[in-house]
Image (cartoon, rainbow, N blue to C red; front, top):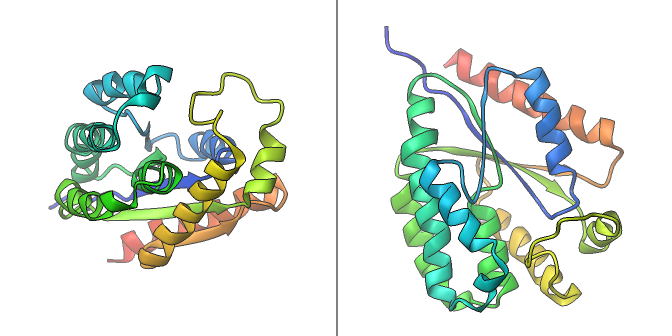
Length: 211
């Protein structure tokens, strides 16, 4: 009997959206899932992550920087995500390609690379279906929540206008990718946000069983 393919679920949102807390709670409710992150995930991807998030990388030209994120993603999919899915395991990733689109293309004002992004996305994903959960908050709420946070990387230290552009990047991505995307109001109280996420994941799993 053929093993039913697992679900690949991505949790996305601005820094301060509550993404980390949601994923930590999911780990308790679904301990048998594979939990991963981007950039990173695979051994090679984590090596690239350390370079991409280094402060020196802020001076890297747009195209090689984008290719760095895409190289990490290709390794992540081929070495971690796809093998798990084919073995019937569900996977949850903390960030994925939406963040690349929002931060590198919109945040850094590299719109000329959009065609490169969509082409490489198609080549990397191939038949891999992504189920997106987007925790929607405004940049103003994000800034308020991040005030006392420590250990920020060089992306976190950008200007308010930069983060406003990142927000527009998220909004643009999910207007383009409407199918398999679920938007949740991240400005609500933590318990309500988590219940909404949990309800959607349970629905995805139920639909997968019924096929």
